Length: 219
Image: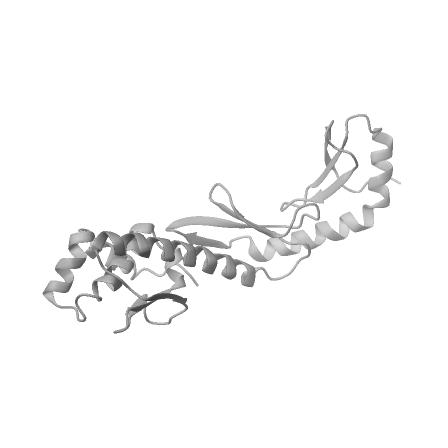
C-alpha cells in the first residue's frame, strides 16, 4: 500500500518509540529512535493511514473556519492557531504574535480562549492594582473581575473594585489608566476637578488612554 500523504520524519537518540502528530497546517509529523528502520516507519504509517487522512480532513475543515481569527492581548494582535496534537497536553500558549490552542479533538475553542483571557486579566489586574494602590497611598477592600456591558470598572463606597475582564484586549498603559481611575474614586467620589488632577498625577497621558477605550478590540 502506498501512502496518500507526505510526512516529515525526525529521528532522535532520545526517542524511545514512534510518535505521530498532525500540526495546524495538516502536516504529518513523525519522530522515531535514530536506529529505527525506515521500512518499519512506513509500515506503521500505512497502518495509521485511515486515521491520518481523517485527522487531516478535520484540521483542514477547522482551519477553514478559523483562518482569519485573531485576538488582541495587551493591545497586541495575535493570530489564533489551533493544533490537534495527540502527543501534547491540551492547553493555550502565547508564541510570537500567535496564540496557540492545542486540542485533542476538533471543536469550538472559544470557551477555552475566553477562560484563558479571563485568567490572564485577573492576574494582571489583581497584581497591578496592588502596586498602583501602594504607589498612590490608597486602600481598597476587594477586587472582582466580571464581564460588564457598559463599564470598564467601578468602585463601591465600601472600597470594592470591579473590573471588566475585556480590558485584557487593551495596552497595559490603557489598563493602568482604568485602575488609577477607580482607585482615585476612593478619595474623590465624583468626577470633579480634584478627581482628574489626581488621575493626571499618576497618569499624565490619561486622556489618550481614555480615548483608546473607545476603540472596540473584541467581538
